[in-house]
Image (cartoon, rainbow, N blue to C red):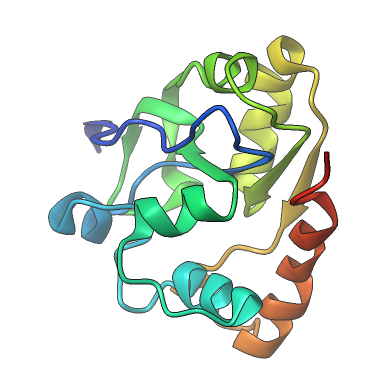
Length: 161
C-alpha cells in the first residue's frame, strides 16, 4: 500500500455553478497529468455527449460550462487505483472552492467520493451532494448511455441566475 498525494489543484472560477467531486486521481490520471485520464474512464465522453461538444482542453471546457472539478482526497494510502483500498485519508479543502464561486450543487463521481464528501466536507460547505454512478472502468456494468442519462441531471443546476 502506497501513500499517494493528489497531484492536481482544483478547476473552478467565480462563475462555477456546480462541482464534481471524485475520490482521488487514478494511476493513469497521475501518469498523464490530468483528471479522468484513463482512456477507459467515461467522464469526459459523458460530458461531451451531454453538451454535444468535443472537448479539446478540459479546463476550458469545464469553465465554459460553469463546472468546477476536484477530488475529495488530498492524500491517502491506496493499492493501485482501487477506491475500496483507500485508508488514512486527508481531504482537500473543497470548502474554499465553494466560498469563492457560485456553486449551489455538488455531484460526486461514485459512492466513495460521496461517502468522503458527506463525512468530511459537507459539514463545512453545507451544500448537498448528489451521488452519480462512477464513470470508472471498474463500473463496467453501467453502459455509456445509462451514464449519460444519469449525468444529465447537472443541466438543471447550470446557467441559472
